[in-house]
Picture 1 (cartoon, rainbow, N blue to C red):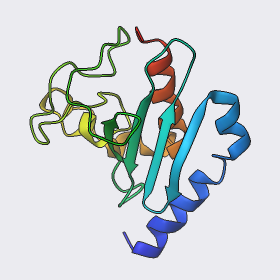
Picture 2 (cartoon, rainbow, N blue to C red):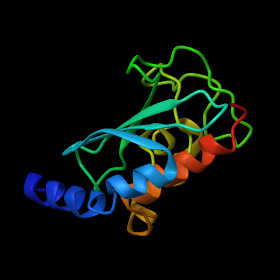
Picture 3 (cartoon, one colour):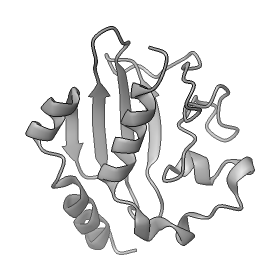
Length: 143
């Protein structure tokens, strides 16, 4: 896809990720600039989670999502989460803990999900949808 089109799709999708929305949801948006979304989730009594979404080829491919501590360091231990989107083992390609959910590059490239191609569902997703779905998974987690 042409780089200008990728940036246009990114800019369109992130236009709804406003400071007011972030405040209502307990998010800190550290960076919202093509091709990166860098956002932390906060709630009372919960360990914050920071995620970075690399959207280099949005929406030809889904964003790659990495998990971080609040200071930006990569997560080095398996997150606990009964919703199951935070995979308990590292991804076979990246060797990093990852979000295993439709709409993330790590999901669609995992050997268990190769029969669920991004091309078949990509028109159903925006970057805000994916970020919100990850946040909901974190909210339901065990702190």
